[in-house]
Length: 426
Image (cartoon, rainbow, N blue to C red; front, side, top):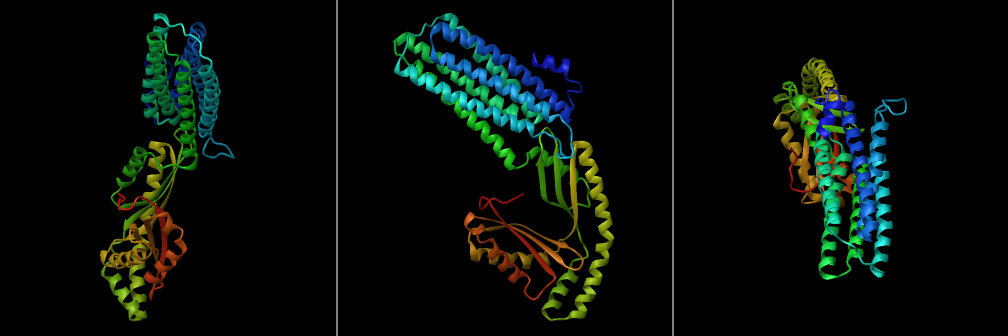
């Protein structure tokens, strides 16, 4: 059914990188969710009233809350389709997240209300009328939810929609809760034990847990989570196709919803001129051989000035390629990296000694030296515990004192990040 509707209603359905196509997919699935959940609500409400089962009635209202979530998602996708504005230059895609949060809160409140009714059924149990027709209706609802799970998961993964992935996860919880109701009704029919209220309470807890989980997922996105690995790999692949680029650093991907991204990064080109001359200059600093330093700086700056326009041109080409292929806005800063290990090794060794004095398990994750003409920028990232991060000011000063001792050409830019110790960054 969904495949037929996709072919019938979505133009250029294979172009899933297009935000317009993503919204069309999302609105179609939300519409299907509204239809199926309202159908299940009416069937289960009728069945619950007919049988006198509190758990079936609770499960029906769970479907009603799912229908409300689908309505909220549909409205969110519609609002997300509004283009960029003066106050929202990156579009309105995050409306999807906001509506998802509100619908998740509504799901939690519905679950809490049904939990109260189910607890009342525990204290005052009533007989449940269970027959093959009721069993068949509940079994069909499980199969419908499985179908909804299948298309939500498939299309959610295809277009990268967190709302649809959450809907797929909710379908799983619905399948489990309905299956539990079927089991409880069979047990009550065979043994006479009145466990319907307990099962209704369990279903209500499932509903509340699903609401909290969905809210947590939206909050995590609003807080700013790690970028999607596939998107990161696509961007990196696009950049590294240029042989002049030897390294990407400070890659930041800001997700504005519905396929709109703002990307910033530094790209580095190797500065081959900074080899033995650099070592000699470092020695000259220690021996206060000022004329030799000035001579080295003149030798250093000429190739740097020649290569800078070339790297800037490459950055503009990459910006256009990312816009054309991924529809994202990119800001790229170019760097001339110092790759001579004779220069890098002493700095790394000095930095490691300083870090280890503060915390034995801390590690240097990244170290890069950038030729900035009149000075050399040293970018350093260390993985550490929260305890050491609280002493970041003292660590920065110690690094500056150690690395810049006797050499004011270096400008140290250290950063401490909380990360699992011992896991190397690629």
